Image (cartoon, rainbow, N blue to C red; front, side, top):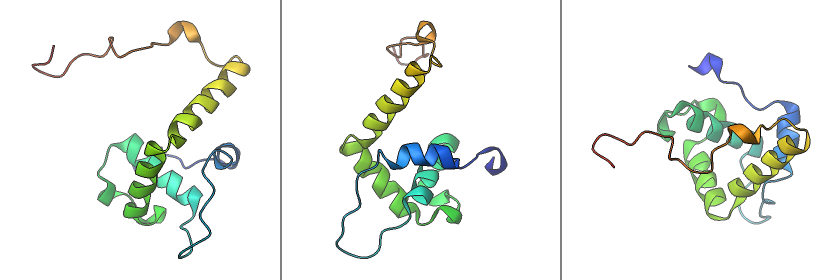
Length: 112
């Protein structure tokens, strides 16, 4: 699976970098944001457990922690909205094919 997954391109990183929270100036040196984001995306795309994440992305604990922090503080929501807006502006998003809820997703076994 690793070979089919690609890290962020330089252009993709430049767009995302501007949407991330500024690092705090206190404490020990911060792990590289680009590497960390690539690790988070790897886990989300592959569905593997955090601790099985390839070491080239750094510490899985760092990736997990930043994913959790950015989920709680709205960073991922802001990224999602910005990227959707960019796609819409360039007419690369077909709103006719979008769904506003998960009603088209089958329920798990035994669920209604």
